[in-house]
Amino acid sequence: MRSSNPVFSREGSFTRDSGYAGFGTAQAGTQHGQNQYGQNPYAGTPYAQQQPQGQPMTDEQLYELYNGPSAGPAATGRMTLDDVVARTAMTLLTLVVAGAVAWFALPFENFGFAIAASLVAMVVGLVVSFKRSVSPPLILTYAALQGFAMGAVSHAFNTMLNGIVIQAVLGTAAVFGAMLFAYKSGRIRVTARYQRIGIAIALGFVLLMMVNMIAMAFGADMGLRSGPLGIVVGLVGIGLGAFFLSLDFAAIEEAIAQGAPQRESWRAAFGLTLSLVWIYMEMLRLIAILRGDD
Image (cartoon, rainbow, N blue to C red; front, side, top):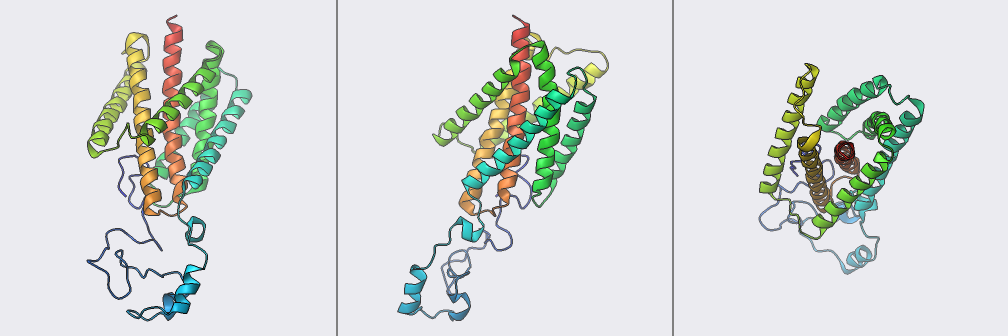
């Protein structure tokens, strides 16, 4: 499967590799005991080796086959929604615990360790995104480093504007719930056109933020993080985070339908975590602007 999601678009992501049939190998019709995917329909059963090609199975063999255990996800090692939920919960728990450590261990005005953790998390995140094989330790390392940085930043915001972290968390949860409902109810359809437009806006947004960061380094302020323009930028940022969530949902749904390997649930958890971190940080900045203007 090819996805526009930055995490799921890697070659080999959410595809059937060793032991999983590719969907580009279908044959015209079935022959020699193979199904439309070019594989023996009884592959993996006791009859895979003993049944001659083209020869029908006996009544006794059919009876034993149909009364045997079904080849469910646990038996085949295929990814399920439960796998994605469990890995995502584990990743988010790691992020929250690391954030709590930073919150209570660091003075709110000390951003040195937070900046270092954020930079290392960015590097680890890039490695995970471009790495062909899934690495759960790297994903959890990213979550720990990103959580540590977010905990320090959240502590600083909450010291200046009491209660803002709870508001940002609730806002992030609301966006996630709304996007999940919209996607599952069919109100949002992840089409090729939808993806192209969203990715184009996201690239423009990131480029604008980079220009603003460079300008601030030289003492200039474009006003993108304050005032009315800052509110617009914050809303666009949250909207892009919601867009990334919709890509995550579509990629996960397709991966499960195609029978992706179970380990790919870690990649799904990483993608969801990236989107939620994006939304939370944009929500935090937006609420800070709104409360600062009161």
